[in-house]
Length: 357
Image (cartoon, helix red, strand yellow):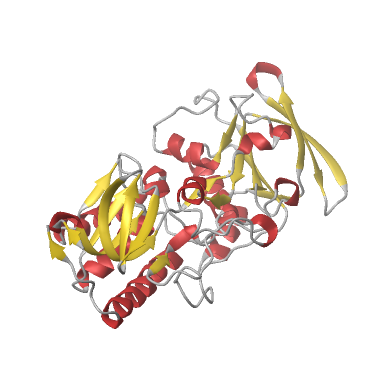
């Protein structure tokens, strides 16, 4: 099999977000040749659009900057603006395809396609896309990064702001049964940030069940209540409609007290959950479960969560949130696990008979 040397790698990683780049770094540090293909024009994924991280407030750009430095130091090729549309196995070698063009050859492939955010327009009752005062959590991050303005007069000292948890998570009507893991803690983090920017603001969080999954997350929740006066209401918003002067009129229910709630808001923030990356499903459909239980659509791996090999596909692995919701510490640990399994796999097989073209 004639393989051009400039396209030959031990491992190819599909996806240049935090999980893909982290895995590439660990593999390269172990002496394994690796290349990364990213469909967007810039690497970094969702993390590149984040401001501060929980629970300590580290800047996302700082974390990514350190990761980019390692990638550069290890001379890992990162091909941006290149989309893998298929994987073909020939003579023990994986061919990474873009249509009919072969982009790379590799003994192992790591899927690191990440996730996409739930389309909040599907929840019509919240008015996302209709009312400019209704934003997603990702859009609020852009506000904190000063990439877009507040949806209200920033000179307002006492804005009224509410966060709605579980938008597109744990919602069987939308076909999404899973918890997205980071919605609750992101809402708490952003609520605190709003109070820091507008100390006299009134901030509410509407939740179904608060799920603080990580170390020190519960402490952040306590601080939000005790130090910043964020109010947490167990219940759902039932409707948002335009109010006077660009405000929003919302209806909700406090399910603990059994009382209806009506309020005027200056901003409503929807915590859109994690759902599978559709592009990956369409392009590599044989690797992704078509419709698993509850229609989760995430990539299935053998013996999850103790294994990272894609079910029924030796030599193909999955890392990070393409397997399901995860937070950064879990993704980093996952990258190390993938690197270990990939390294063992490459050592266990007889290297294909590469012939220099």
